[in-house]
Amino acid sequence: MKNIRNFCIIAHIDHGKSTLADRLLEFTNTIQVTGGQMLDDMDLEKERGITIKSHAIQMEYIYNGEKYVLNLIDTPGHVDFSYEVSRSIAACEGALLIVDASQGVQAQTISNLYMAIEHDLEIIPIINKCDMASANPDEVEDEIVELLGCKRSEIIRASGKTGMGVEEILAAVVERIPHPEGDEEAPLQALIFDSVFNSFRGIIAYFKIVNGVIRKGDKVKFFNTGKEYDADEVGVLKMEMVQRQELRTGDVGYIISGIKTSKEVKVGDTITHIARPCKEAIAGFEEVKPMVFAGVYPIEAEDFEDLRSSLEKLQLNDASLTFQPESSLALGFGFRCGFLGLLHMEIVQERLDREFDMNVITTVPNVSYNIYDKQGHMAEVHNPGSMPDPTMIDRIEEPYIRASVITTTDYIGPIMTLCLGKRGELVKQEYISGNRVEIYYDMPLGEIVIDFYDKLKSISKGYASFDYHASGFRPSKLVKLDILLNGEPVDALSTLTHFDNAYDLGHRMCEKLKDLIPRQQFDIAIQAAIGAKIISRETIKAVRKDVTAKCYGGDVSRKRKLLEKQKKGKKRMKQIGNVEVPQKAFLAVLKLD
Image 1 (cartoon, rainbow, N blue to C red):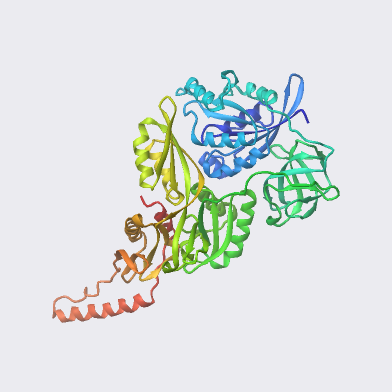
Image 2: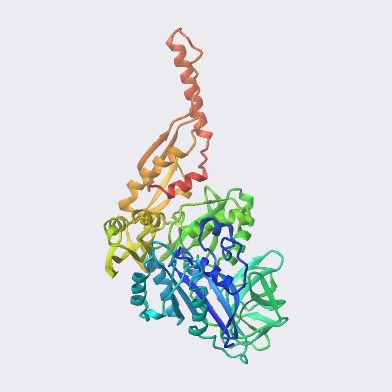
């Protein structure tokens, strides 16, 4: 056990975690590098150049004549996937904190670092991309010393591209990160930190053994669900899965036991033996808190059950996705899904399409509100459709977040304007080092859900980094904005918005829909309404045939008669015609600006 090291890599998005991880694997001869990212194996990850899923892999390294087993978990950097990071941290004793030599310490670096410190991990600071022309490692070193309070000599300078500093990193992992503590004689306790679905083998759970030993063929049970299984196969994670006869305390590995239903595997659960169970489950990491809710509906109503099984399989691979069934007037049966953010929602939609061939409609994303009625009872509302009658409501409370934005002093003005426009309240601002400043805001979560992050990136030319955590609920003046097509409400487009923004938002939505909804044989009225009050209207004119073309000359009453006849036909058509809202209209409403 003293020759095992479990560690993860944490950093802000785009600081070169996966590239550096590839260099470590190459240096320890775990893989032969063929170009491109090796650990990011999902097509989506390669296309977007981001890590979506944590990847666990085992390396063997000879140091001073002794063989060490290094278990590495490469984690995502984007704030939407921070749940992946928290799970990886729970399975490790140390962390490599990577900071980009040209960007310096950014918001996600700090929040991931605090998460690691809470779990008492040993932190090894690394400055990456030191080979770049724009690198200033000396300044970044100052920031790291200020952040961690470590010595300068402890900071390693590296480059994932050239492989500089890789040997020092591996030596530091062996010397500085403590080996796992645990008792091999104690009853088995293993923490499940991830799971994947395999269509041939069922569900494969990844775990880290805290106490005890697990052997092939053991009878095991999952502590929280109480289900019992045979360990058909156990092993370790290299680039492929490698079978082992037994895994001991401190090992990270996988178990295949023919589990078919996804509900039986919960990330954070504890595996133990049936014959000699442990007394209590491992206190792992917190439950996931979805930040953004959106309805996901199949385009064909009969695909509802297929969508359910696709979401269940996806949930195994992505534990931060939550969903429950719901129905809508316009879209039929579907699911109310909880996501950690907008990027997460986009990725889930893409993966449903690619991996399960599910074509879905996603409604406008929103957050959950607490609604109190006149009797003082509280109800949690996730979508505008389930809002009670306005006359019954005493007050509505919306979730607030504490946001921290790190940027250079050049962009403070525009960023403050943006935050104030989103109903933010400035809490404080602190200068970190040189011309870098951290600004704290209290903001409603509903305001940042749709386009805040994109706007922040564009006004700061990509230099601002953003991170947030929930900070409770506050009363707010919210109204439900409905969109009507020919007097019929489209519930997929209705939103909850602040009273001050409602007129502007309603007007912009109507204008946008006017461009996107195809013209019909009759006039279509698009209206935005709060309750019974119409606040904005646009009309899509009918496509009409020129019925008077055949009248050349003659009396004007002939033309009038034909036009009257056409008018009656249009009126009749309007009563029976229905308006299809294309999927791109739903998406365009999200990106209104």
